[in-house]
Image (tube, rainbow, N blue to C red; front, side, top):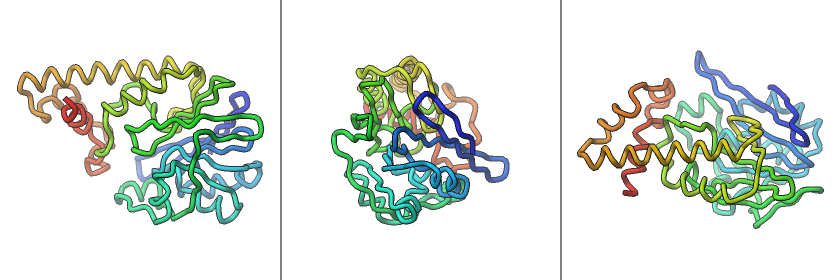
Length: 263
C-alpha cells in the first residue's frame, strides 16, 4: 500500500500479485468521502487506513470487484454508508459471479447493500455532480466537483491508448462518454488505475483522439473487406500478456467488434 497526497485529496494505491502477474488500483479520500474501495485482497493492507480515517460515506464509481471489494467490510465493521448508481444495487446485494482469473487476482466480492446516488452527493465542504459515463461498465459514474475543477473519473480514462478491453465494453459508448465529460470544466483528474493526473482534461482529450482515430481505421479496413481477425492482426500485432491470462475476456478484438457493431 502506498499513500500519496494531492492537495485535499489522499490517494491510496493497492497492489495484488499472482505469480509474475500484478495489478493495482487506487482509492481516494477527501473531506469525509471515500471514492471506491479497492479489491478484497487489499483489505488487510487498507484496514489501518480505514480505521484511522474519518470516513463519512463511500461513493462507488461502478460495481466491478476491484472497486467494491472491501465495501462489505466498511459497511458491517465501521457502519459506513455506501452509494452507487441505482441500477447497480441489485447486483451488489449478491456475491459477484466472477471469471476465475479475476477472482484469483482481485479476490471475490461479498454482497453489500448500497444506497442509490441522487443527482449530486455532498460532503461537509464539497458538492459533486454525478455523471453517467458508460462504456467500460453500464452503470459507471464519474464525480465532478465544479467548485474546484476536480474529476474523479473511475475507469473512464485508465490509459490514453488502450490496446484491449473486456468483452462487454464498447469503444463507441466510451467515445460518447468522454465527449460528454469533456464538456465539464475540470483540470485535475483522479483515475482509479492511473492515479492523479494534473492536466486531466488534456489526458482525456488524448484518449478521445486515439479512440476516434482507431474507429476510423477499423471502419476503413472493414469496408475494404477485412475480417475482425485481419483487422486485429493489422492494428494490434502484439498480444499483451493479459489476453491469454484472462482467457481472452480482455482482447483487442472486442474493441474492433464494438466499433463494427455501430457502423
